[in-house]
Length: 434
Ligand code: HEM
Image: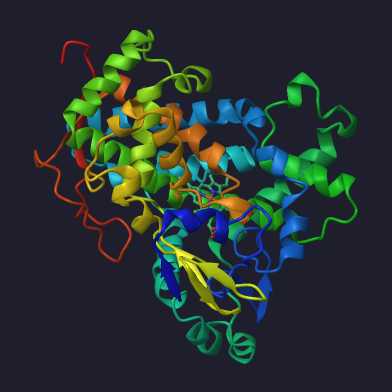
């Protein structure tokens, strides 16, 4: 695999026409049952399946649809704060924010997708091994995706798959149960002709996916489950990582936190209500903080691999033969001195607010947090909805400090619920004077 570091090659490799297809890296990330791939929007290498899956649902992830999911995010934020208040503010106990942000991220996407949280927040722990299985899946995938041949021999081998007992991924199982419940509810109450009525405007993703299935007979039987499952697998850990990066850096850099608080109070946002999406998107420093977090610590850590198409391609002035796997790592281009400046290794949200229009455009063009081009992230707006609301509301409500006083660098063991994290914090209610 050729790892390309020149940001100028982003529009070439990740074009909107999608001329470089996804490599076998993504096969290693697909779910397989009995030797057969379960198609998914994220991992499919088949452009026909991708079109079939994306076209009917793309509008559900658009900017204009966002506000309709807002009440789901608000209720999960309130549930999150309720738990933080009871368990940590009142008791003075140390809060492992690393884990709690992950529980928030899972529960909020569960709520938006199914109108039902997984229940991690209320229980304060992993349920049915869902987060544990996600951790194992991604830690295995980080190795196996680098050796797709090994994956084929050992994991996806159709003969071995037939011999093994089929295990259902707990996220897939959760999605199936919610679907069965929805089917019952819809059969009982939902008026198909009235889906645009006021009462239905905040309906969850699953309800919308099922509407597509009912209206379009070309929808394959597996599509609703594939859509629902990909919301959770692609949209929970990723959002948790970005949230951790934002909060870690705000606690680590009090000047950034103070600047954000100044921005919030200059916009009259210091009350304790959940900040609305409309107000959150008018806060340039908040925007800079979230962009800087995505730049410093992009949640998707490996190069997004693509295959050079027939005829070959010119990349960085070299003629690369067809079939070669190439990829750009966000972790590499996000530290490019020419684009982001000589201080690109340090946290400095001001680089986004102080930059000229031209420099800012260049930086945004090199930002691969959510990928680029034809296969970029469909859920970017959804995760922004969650993050843009949670971060200002949380810093308005709490004073947060590292339990060890300094915030050791993150160190996560290869298991869920580790205690070794620089995000062990103490929380108290924020008073404007402190
Ligand atoms: C901070 C949060 C997130 C990050 C950093 C992130 C990152 C990414 C990246 C880098 C890609 C493209 C990978 C590639 O080119 O191979 C991608 C694709 C995708 N993401 Fe996200 N994502 C996030 C949140 C979400 C959410 C909330 C959802 C769903 C609600 C989602 C659903 C998807 C899907 C379905 C794809 C595949 C799109 C396609 O191939 O057309 N993501 N994401």
